[in-house]
Length: 93
Image (tube, rainbow, N blue to C red; front, side, top):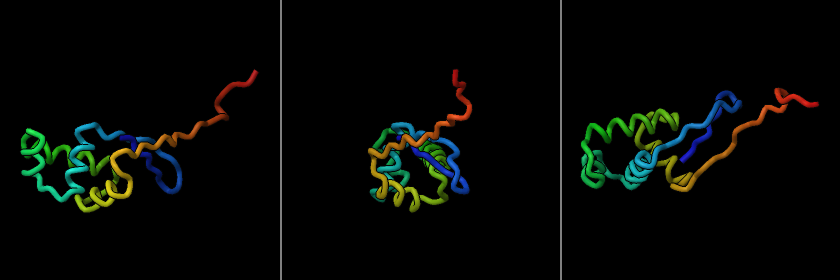
């Protein structure tokens, strides 16, 4: 899942959630605890915590609640292709 982000109204770049991060974001949006997510995905709780930290960094949020709200707003199929093309740098013959 790709997430575009802006800073001060200017496009900065695109961050991509891995498939595993997308699954964890979905689980967070369902209200599952870290232990439940770990059990459901067959991974360790510290691994879940690492993924959640990466998700929050990529989404620019600071809480699980914000991850859940973002996921509910954008859904699992949200893909943004908003890369700005700078035409001034292309040479014209």
